[in-house]
Every structure is written in structure tokens, then in C-alpha cells.
Length: 220
Image (cartoon, rainbow, N blue to C red):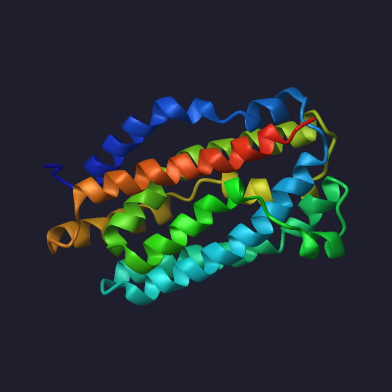
């Protein structure tokens, strides 16, 4: 049995780390081998994902009986709202205007992640769902940082175009601390289930990799 929230999170991160390299899109972008339109595709998919995750986080907050869990979920929802505003510039970097972005039809492989997140927001114990979310923070932030660097170095794009990825690449230690407090409260109250928390982290990562690799498979 895991002793505390930090130990649980670190254990899950160690389990997930070996498969983070299965992301096939980020290396393509880093080499400059992805078509520039890839940024429009990402923006189009994220325009659906961000809106869905915003709703899921508010639902998770409303179901959370512990105040730290509520504040964590509500705070992430605010971040999603900020990220949404950065998508038109990302789409434009890939040659997509705002009207086309609004009309974009998403791919099933990219939308599995937000669909699973919505299921968890409705059905999961909030403390365990938070473990799943935070377990993937480091990998997501690393992917975003690498893409932002490549956008500038390989594609010659400006700060506005890179803003979406810059936003998520920036570490926010206080958010992780808040998440750990929420998870610890759930564990102390006997509401947390370690087996389910590990499952949530594993599936979150699998669905995120599906997002990236679905787009990679569409590259010419």
C-alpha cells in the first residue's frame, strides 16, 4: 500500500515513463519533417478537446467534496479557457483561418482522450482522477516545450503561433502541490483507490499517445 500521495504519484510516473517515447509526432516536428499543416490539425483537434476538458473539469469540481480538489479542478478549467484563446494563432500557423477552424471535423483517435476524461469526471473518485491527470503533466509539458522549440527553430514561427504550446510547457509547481494535497485528503478519508488511480494514469497516457499518433499517421 502506498504511504502517501507523493509516493503514489512518483510510482505511477515511473511506471508510465518508459512509454512516453512512443509519441511519434513530436520527433517528426522536432526534425522539421512534419508538414506545416500539422499545426492546423492540432489546433482543430484541440478546439474540441479544450472545450470538452473545460466542461469535464467543472463537472469534476462540482462532484468534489474536498475543497482542495474543487479548487484544483476549477483552476485547471480556467487554464483551459486561456488556452482556447491561443488556438486561432496556432491554426493560422498551419494555414487555417478561424472560419475553417470552427468548421473543423475531429478524428476519433484524437478525441478518445477527452471522451475518457468526460467519463472519469462523471464516474471517478475525484482524488483518483486527479492522480491520473497529474501523472501525465510532466510528459504533456515536455511534448509542448519540444514542439514550441521546433516551431521556432525549424518552422520560423513567432511567439503568437507558439503561445498554445508555451502555455502548457511552463511548469506550475503550486498546481502539483495543490493536486497532491487533494489526493492526500482523499487517501486520508479512505475514498481513494490506488488500483483505480493507477489505471486512470495508464489510460490517460494511452489516450494521449493515441492523440499524437493519430495525427502522425496523417502526415504525408
